[in-house]
Length: 399
Image 1 (cartoon, one colour):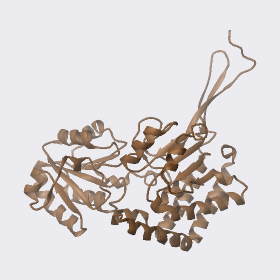
Image 2 (cartoon, rainbow, N blue to C red; image 1 turned 60 degrees about the vertical axis):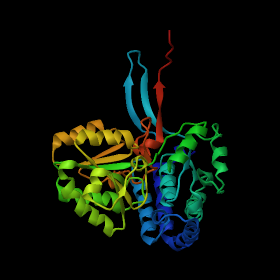
Image 3 (spheres, helix red, strand yellow; image 1 turned 45 degrees about the horizontal axis):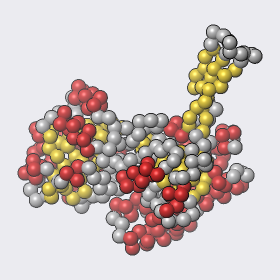
Image 4 (cartoon, helix red, strand yellow; image 1 turned 120 degrees about the horizontal axis):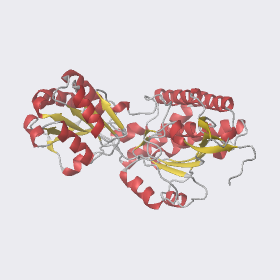
């Protein structure tokens, strides 16, 4: 049914949902306060609590994202290409929805709204399983979607929220291969490994973000300070925040002291290799585990490297194929980095924080796919569709 809805009706439903979100901000913040109190009792970090928090500004941003999705071209029923065979058959490649999508995620309530809007726009039914720390917030958001769907006589199950917090419910859902066409886990490494191991349907992994910024010997150091600071401190608790900084040895002694001062003003803990600790005495020693860790917090690991190839090698060994950036004025070095770093997004002279569906013009995102098959990087409407071939003949038979 969703695949057959007219574009204008889908736009109308999404716009009304966005308006209701804005009007219901007090109710959503009240529900969110319950989650925040529980999160503090659970001992979640300040960065994780920031991911969870809803205020009028964030609710306004959620509503805007829905408006943006509503304005996007309808991705369903589009003829991608067509051709005529010598025998007269006309073949068309046409976009279709994936079906029923299960999305498993943690913390951020805005994910509930963004995933619901993108799935609805792309003609897919969605089953949302958010983290227990955002249970009340997610319920409040999903309730608004269901109320609007009911008004327009669209099955409310089109946007469903798993109503229980028990993690065993995930295992039960992952067995429903006849009912669920795709599962998308986004969260920590443990969650994703568990889903991949137990799912009986296809999985698109939105893996953790061990993101890097490499400061080259030919970087504009003022630019580098701004980019590295933004990548780490603008919002440390999200997947596209930098977790490891790589600095060329030729500029390390000039770059690191002012950068460390910026981090300390933000209360950010620094861990470094031996060369970094010589320049920044008193910081903690970075361990092998640190290079592989997604902190989602005000903690940063720093390594001094001898050349761009060593930076690339580090990213290949320790990165998660999410987002990595180089700061340099040398175009040849930048192109080498782009060619050899096999991440879903590679930045040149830009913060890793731009790795985001809204920043890419997608309106919103399901998450950041670190897979290569079907969807990669910020996953918007195009990642939520497939295609079929339509063949038109005039009584053709094959001989």
